[in-house]
Image (cartoon, rainbow, N blue to C red; front, side, top):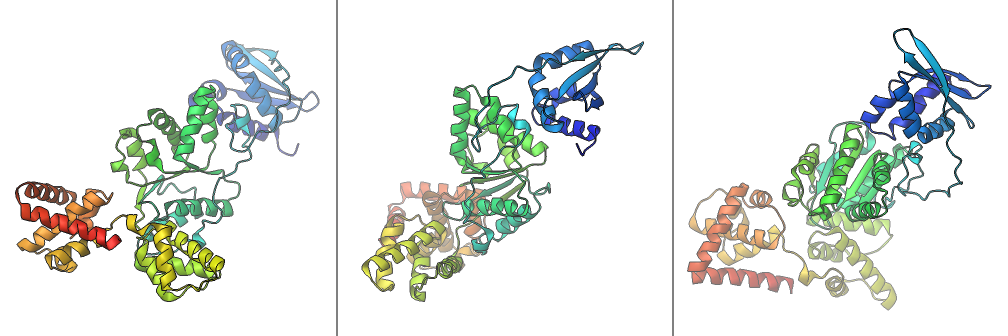
Amino acid sequence: MTESPNALWEKALALISENVSEQQYNTWFKPIAFESFNEQTKTVLVQVPSPFVYEYLEENYVQLFSKVLRRTFCEGVRLAYRVVTDREHRITQDFEAEQPEATAVQPKRRANQSPSVLDAAVPQELDPQLNPHQTFSNFIEGDSNKLPRSVGQSIAEHPQSRQFNPMFIYGPSGCGKTHLINAIGNRVKQIYPQKRVLYISARLFELQYTDSVRKNTFNDFVHFYQTIDLLIVDDIQEWIGKEGTQRTFFHVFDHLFRNNRRIIMASDRPPVDLKGMPDRLLTRFSCGLIAELEKPNRQLCIDILNSKIRRDGLQIPEDVVQFIAESTNGSVRDLEGAVNSLMAFSVVYNRKIDLMLAERIVKRAVKVDDRPLTIDDILDTVCNHFNVTPAAVQSKSRTHQLVVARQVSMYLAQKYTKMPAARIGKLVGGRDHSTVIHSCRQVEQRMKIDRSFSDDLTSIENAFKLKKA
């Protein structure tokens, strides 16, 4: 035994505190005073303040005490109590703790299986469930992701910092959210391999929760998540309307946050748009950093494609790269899917990669005809219809034709995109969300009474369909 008995006792207390609530620890374990350790008899002697405390510990925590002391002191260790029976006259009485009943040898626990209260004293082998291919080195930086990428890298390098905790990342599908949160986790494991990092989808967390309720192992499930140093949860929006899962995550979140553990969450929408989640969760989601990941613009799409092409040792002409970047609506998944499909077709059919082949493959690979519209698509089509320029629509001008074009753009953006009103207003002339809401009402009311205006809207929407055909 190289460490002093006092140091070993402090380790034992630390392990116990990981397995009981703060209130239980302060009530039953904090008042215990370490007396001595007899190496010959392998006996740990502790003093407790009353017979009631002694009886309660023996009745409720004998298994926990036994397991913790074996791990910190030695195998075969015994526990003895010195109980204060008369505080005024300082009279004490010694009792030997009951030895827990021998149990059958348990099979080795699988990684990520919820541990029992006793097993949680020693952190298990933990598979972080991270994608090792999603790292910062291949997460290409651009205007649309510069802030969340920089903050994510800072968090990964300084996970103990309280700044930006929790980090809530949101953005449309395919913009790189999953890549970024995996990159953070992989970087933490690289720098701090001892950290317990776990990436999990919201859906899997929900399934684990319902399974724990069904098997009556709910406490084990919660204790397992309370041992995590960095918890990464993807697709938080999946919990909308799932009250039991929400309540459980609230308690997990509070424990991790109070103990300065890291929490990173990703969603397809900001907290304010997570309707169906309780306010107490939404306020916690918002108390750190909320970072938006936008879909990459054309130049960033080209940079991402070129990075993948270099990484995979491919040869794709520049005009094909530009065509793919323009055709996939800024979805990183679609970009990679298009390149993979293009290369597979080229190899199997021994075809040279050119623009004609790219046009044929991309339509199949990324469903260009079904792709969602962007603000740029809407602005371009509306401006062409009303014979104005996007710059004029974005200006502060209040001329009638520009006001109509601006209102129609906002109305169609709300109809065809999932963006919140505040984001639409920012992209269409730097207006606020109330202007967007007012514009949409104006358009809807005018369509009811102005047949010509209604025909204009139909014509613009048909132009969308032609563009995607």
